[in-house]
Image 1 (cartoon, rainbow, N blue to C red):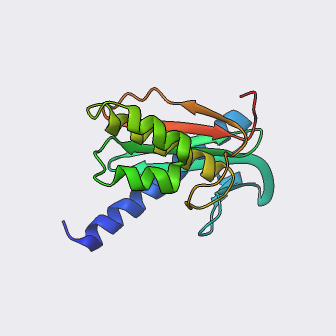
Image 2: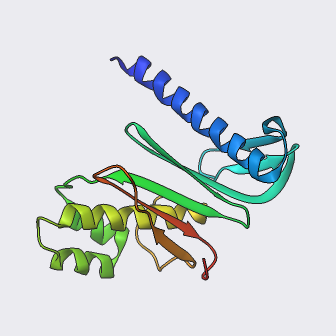
Length: 169
């Protein structure tokens, strides 16, 4: 498969996921899917528009390989991230630079056979929190407020997290 075909498939998958999110929201809100738009700009979280008006509804998308996740929070921002477990050769530098000292120390203490799973879980937790706050991946800084929830996903080897700005989620 060429890069052009892979790009088309990825774009089709993204469109299908957004359509599914609109249909799910329409069912919950009792409106037509055509009354809901999900718009996004690079570097900003997706925004839900109801009949072309902004809403407080938060949504987040994550894709890895053939899998996608849509998270919707009717009460405000949400971040979601999924990732297949993989062995990252330079995990120490990545953890130090992007996950912070506590996560880095925890990974150092994790047995090597369990480290890829632990790293992936910590990574998706961080990505979900950043997405919730509308922030791009950047080097470590203090924790982001809110509640992170680990997902029990039905796909072996796939890890994921949700993050809401609500501490009581």
